[in-house]
Every structure is written in structure tokens, then in C-alpha cells.
Length: 73
Image 1 (cartoon, rainbow, N blue to C red):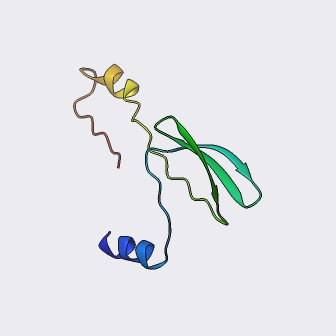
Image 2 (spheres, rainbow, N blue to C red):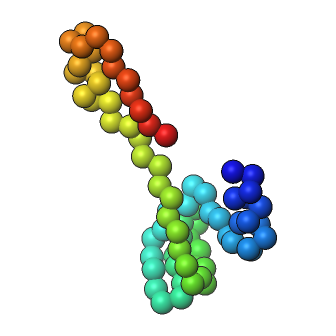
Image 3 (cartoon, helix red, strand yellow):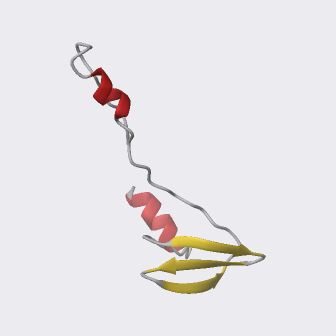
């Protein structure tokens, strides 16, 4: 992970966290962060999205099977 962070810095890649992508146009994007919208020039966009686990099946099987193992990130 340290090497990845170093490459991001050396490549002058801008990272935005806790930011919502609200628009895409040719050569630019519109984002919203903390209620403020901004337009940024760019040539590449990479989205990394975190999902919450859905443990509904695990809950339904509790007490019905011997072992349950949940695997996620």
C-alpha cells in the first residue's frame, strides 16, 4: 500500500474522498463534497466505491447450521 501511495503522489494524481460524482462532460467532471459543488478538468476518472455487506442470509441461517463464515474485504 505504501508503494501505491508513493506512485499516486509521484504521478500527481488527485484523489478525492467522501465525494459524490454528479456530472461527466468531455474533459471535466462535477463533484459534490460537504454540500459544495466543484467542476474539475480531467482526462481519466477512477471510481472506488465501498459497499456495506448484506448479512441477511447469514442472519437467516444462524442456529440452523453449525458454522457460518462471512468473507469480505
